[in-house]
Amino acid sequence: MEVLKDKGAVVTAAASGIGKAIATAFIEAGASVLLCDINAKALDAAAGELGERAIGRVTDVSDESQVEAAMRAAREAFGSLDVVVNCAGFGAIMPLTELPGEKWRAVQAVTLGGVFYGVKHAARQMLEQGRPGVIINISSVNGQQAGEGQVAYCAAKAGVDQITRCGALELGARGIRVVGIAPGLVETPLTRKELEDPATRELFMGVIPMGRAVEAREIAAAAVFLASDEARSINGHTVVIDGGSLTRGYPALLTGVKKS
Ligand SMILES: NC(=O)c1ccc[n+]([C@@H]2O[C@H](COP(=O)([O-])OP(=O)(O)OC[C@H]3O[C@@H](n4cnc5c(N)ncnc54)[C@H](O)[C@@H]3O)[C@@H](O)[C@H]2O)c1
Image (cartoon, helix red, strand yellow):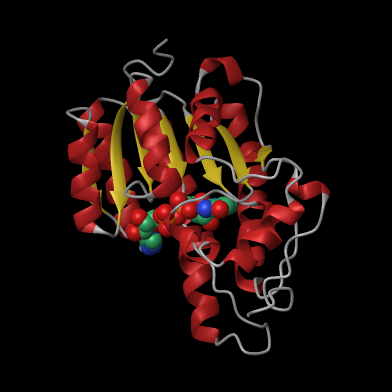
């Protein structure tokens, strides 16, 4: 069923992993999607794969003017901006005492700042067009759960969860919903390299009751639901999709891996 038929959408980090899976699912659900990413080559390939309702636009989400321009361009191209997914984000696995300020700032600029700009400018377009929409922020279990060597990422994702709550609080009265998805381990280019190390994989599997990583298309299916009218009363919350890993601890990525 095309639950997003004729909707205009923006998805950031859409050239890879979770963002690409969400853009794909949105197209399948009937939406037109502006795919935003900094990787021009991968973006071209993704937009080409997804067909005529997909447009690629090189966008660095840490640059407010680029985010604003992307939201405006999507509204102009599709007639309205109905759904925005702020997906771009990354971390830096390093002991807290070693983490250079520069790396801290780079993580915050994209993972936290990019979400703020995305919510701000998505909402401005929706208010201007007089037709509300849905904003979905991709968080992580690390928004709630501390991880060794993950201070920059955990702080940024906790901030993302608060942007979701504050956005819902301020924009709800004007009909705009702001929600989040917090994935646990999803096998994507971001995590694949780590998981190639059998000791790291074992460590992760040890904390996931279901014993497997989440698939990107499962995150995408939740995004389609949250973007749809069926989810019209869900606002300000972040849905955790993690195979149950939050019930245990986060793997000890610095001290728990015994390198052979
Ligand atoms: N993979 C996981 O296990 C997992 C778990 C929880 C949360 N997440 C979150 O999901 C999101 C996507 O992760 P993924 O695993 O799909 O990663 P990925 O590495 O597969 O894709 C990330 C994409 O983001 C793009 N990107 C990087 N910086 C950007 C910027 N400044 N502006 C625009 N695009 C930029 C990259 O070019 C890449 O195409 C991230 O926010 C991540 O924190 C991932």
